[in-house]
Length: 368
Image 1 (spheres, helix red, strand yellow):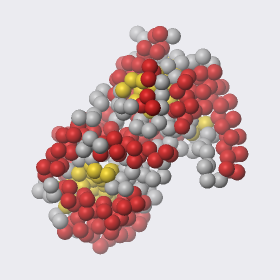
Image 2 (image 1 turned 30 degrees about the horizontal axis):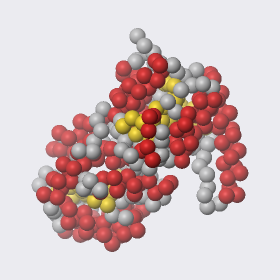
Image 3 (image 1 turned 90 degrees about the vertical axis):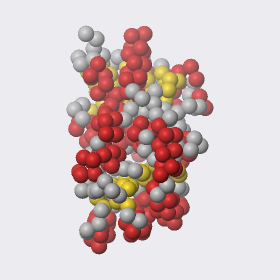
């Protein structure tokens, strides 16, 4: 039986970590004897999420450049040098057949060190607008797996393969669970349901908009599933004291995202690459509020890739307080519009992404 040694590097957000774990799980299910090691940034969420998924991880002291205060980058450069040294040591000891980068701070030093030691690499770029790290690493990569068309703007065309972004395995079975999902959240089947997610840390503007417009939603007979993210839960909990008997389920984090999607008639979400891949595969109508706090404003570009195909509606973060609730209300009350958004977003889904990425990984190793 074939067995491979694979390093997977990157993280920082769930959007990088979930696809990485999905790739690892696919390697493990197809080649159970394989050894997989993750390399992450030592103070980021991968250090908790990856071991929880059953994999070993090495943390690098790497951090991002501070564009607003160049003086602070002295420390960043010193951490980068340490990270390169630790990444090289890790690769020498682990002796991988390939290094896979999924984006995030740690993938830079890891893939750079792998290339310097003659180890082939594969990049998985989740966004429609490539990150700086991946653009720098592209020259050394054997293959670049992408989720959007037109990525030859950033990468050599002969290295590109469209695979889509892997999503969490449990979500794929979400579609047929509407009744049990509604019961799980304590909601009823005779009202429309809006799911609100702003990422694991939360999204200030989305949360503020929901607080100022919740009465309007409830008066229109809409029920709500609301993930606040960890920075905003305390405030939301205090706010909800006056809505105690109302159909609102609220938590820091949703453990059963399969149920959340199954229950939702409409989703309000940031426009991270993983969220968009999930919405496409689950055929969910969505109002996207791109985060303005990400490099190269890539979430707006992700959202526009859907809006241009009439597969989602976008509300800019700067306009969310005045427009988000009204936009969502108008949409959820228009059954034909919900249906056309659902049909159009489904056309953009790339299926079996993790399997297709693992096919590419295996091809590279066997070619070597």
